[in-house]
Image (cartoon, rainbow, N blue to C red):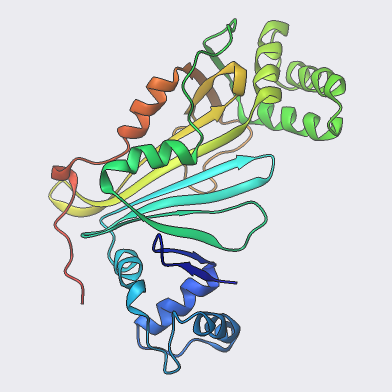
Length: 278
């Protein structure tokens, strides 16, 4: 069910509720499949009987309709994949976060000066020194990584079996040396999450207005530290990566991850002039 917290101007909304808003903003009647969602929004006062939108929705819907910058955060961990993000508009900045097993995401206004802090929190970036590790980078292929994950699934949470099977899979599939196989299997086994932040905005490319994209992909390996996935290079297009694609992981400090997140944001002079709202 959707909900609204007036004390923090925050909403809990599912994609289907956002679809209702999209229809109403365009002056359209929501399709039959969205009638239940419309009824839920009317029950909490966000939509009136005639389809009128509550004034409290204005910052959210205006920002969504004409964002200057979109930041998407995809985090894959033990509970599957969660999607978060931040929308930057002319007047407001809205953050949204998902929750494991929940249909709704929370949408809440934030101050523009806290964008980097919010992104760091969404990916659980933590300070501190990681344990010593024999290697600073690892290079292999995506097919080898897939073999490691398959072996991990086969182990079914048996820690000793997981170590044995992942190392065996890495040696047999990728022809890795034992030391390399041990290093990569240690990363896979200690991984808290894999996450990716992508920033998209309208910029200028060779004098033409064009969509600009930057992205960062990182493995959070707990005591083994943070590892930037330099290959395959982000942003990745659908169908671009296969088993033979190169995989390169480079260990970085939390401070360096923070810098890389900061570099995802465009400077003001990189943004195209905003398109006036209709």
